[in-house]
Length: 419
View 1 (cartoon, rainbow, N blue to C red):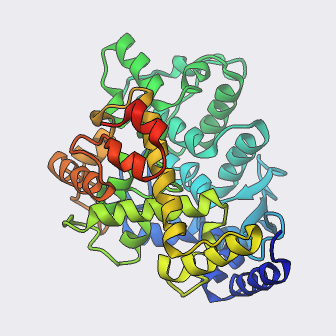
View 2: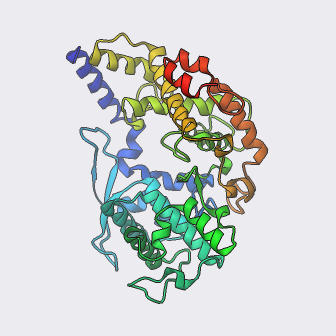
View 3: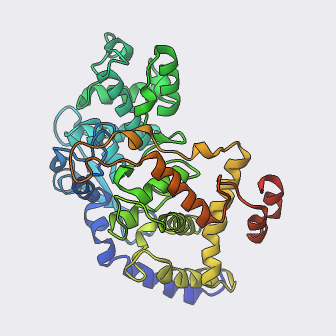
């Protein structure tokens, strides 16, 4: 460590700020406090993203969780925020189930399944957490199966297992069936073996076998199940999800932030959005690379922007290493990180048509809430992608020029995949 005294002072200042107003909601209610806000905005995934508002939101909110189920809060090592809400089921058939509850996991396993009993959601999350499954992908995959059942693509007998030899009525809101299917996915039992691959692969196989079009409600981008912010009325975020190298990941694209904070008109697109999407992605990459928790992003100036964070981050790097990083050097971290990830995808066979959104988001508008009637049209998506590629300095079809890769200090990558 180059300068321990400076590093300790910087760490103290950041920790103190992280216990202030900008993280209060995380410290009190955890990330589940976002449930009501997403519902009010009409972007809360409901019944496999068919709607964006949930009628029983008050029963699955972060406030309800805090009042009825929270045991304690825990934190990552030495974190001053402590956002994870350890919650327990005290009554009913799921009594004793206990796990940490976060927004993304909760929405995927409550409203997105049509389930208003938060006790069942805690049980689902305990299964995922204890048995090594991604709770978001699990929830969205179960909601896909529920819609397949309600549309007649899958039948009761398709969900037969040892515990339910006659099968399951996999309707939205059926908590018992959802929990049983989660265990089938975990154990790769019966149809759980197929669904354990996620919605992209499962829909391809089911549609090939049954002549159906369930891919239209298989909610994934590049095979990764969609996060808890419906992008039909978050147009900047929609661009970020479509072009994301990992797929539809809210941790890689932070473009939902300007949309939800009112910094953009979230219902429309304009010529600025490609730059906003690109810069928010690069911004997130800096935090991930160091790594720093993104929940401190407003602890520098009150806004989640570079001007407040980069000077302090440069000081952290310099105090640790003895380097002489400045604002532009920190900025370059995010630019390099996002380009090398895209270069990897290109090498592995990425094509421009892979930068896409789920069919539902482009063709099926909500019927309820403030986002009713809105979709991301194919024309809007194509326009947004072009704006993003231009902001990144890439070609019109999303390839990376050799000159850019060489400028970023990656001549070997330029030789392999540059154009």
